[in-house]
Image 1 (cartoon, rainbow, N blue to C red):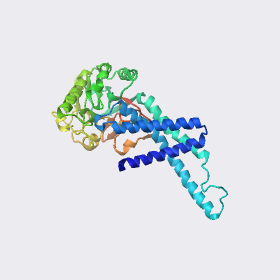
Image 2: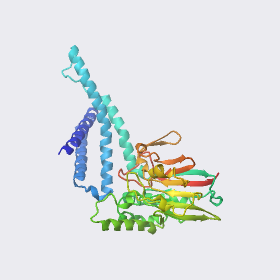
Image 3: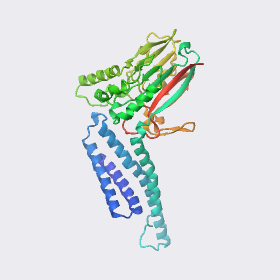
Image 4: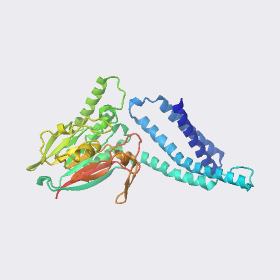
Length: 406
């Protein structure tokens, strides 16, 4: 019972101050009545969902909608509450001061709530409300093509100018707009890259989530050098209470087969040789390796038969792998491609000025390009979305990397 008491008190506090702000600015009883009805309806719906939802059933469209509704409802109210709570502290201090110095000409101990403070609170609350609403309606499909050129002195001559398109974190179970996804596939194909790489998380939990989208993703063009993929942490079915180990394994096998169905060669702790002209490079794919998530990746096994002087591109879903093992590895992995972080789907990015997201306090490499001693990692911001059904400031990404000799 105690675990429900604190959330109940917090929600009551948020609702009290939010209503105070609205009531101070708006005098119409009809508008206030509608506001109260909507607030109560949202609270009832969210409460019912959390009481009845099986948290072991994995992420689905209803849970995504509920998380979005929760954030868009209560995050703005937190700002309102903080501002009006600050005003109440001021009112309390002013009332005490007036009382003790005998300067209270009002019938009330508290000075009246000031309308302009409520207006400021509502104006500030409109910023997160509008941002979250934008992220849930437009931002989540606002695909950006980001291009980088990387120079390597030991790049084989035939690969000078080779282009790679990387996508990551599809999370097909979250999609709800076929036209937008087809537009993104067209963007991928417009790049006409020599190699297409997918760095994991094809679903949220279940293989069946991808079934409506197989024909769409099969449209990704087959480039000269091929299409390859690895698994992400969500592809192992770790976030679902399975009836049996057999059911979990069947789902896992079905997820691996999805890569075949969309014409990607899935690399499970193995490497392949990519040949162009008279030269070759090595593409290494590990299973998921994460500090906080599934650790099935085996870099030693995946690199079996490779030499230190080989030019290597590593696909590893979780960028913490690069930070922990790859960047200082004696075998020199020239370029690592990762995803996983989604850039938290929330942050501020102004090229050349600022790049910030809360996820940077968890992952050192969380979005974009990083370098150490001539070794690079690129962390894709993700193709899809998960948990919060939107993106604010950190947009879905299609990465194009050009390899240059130099």
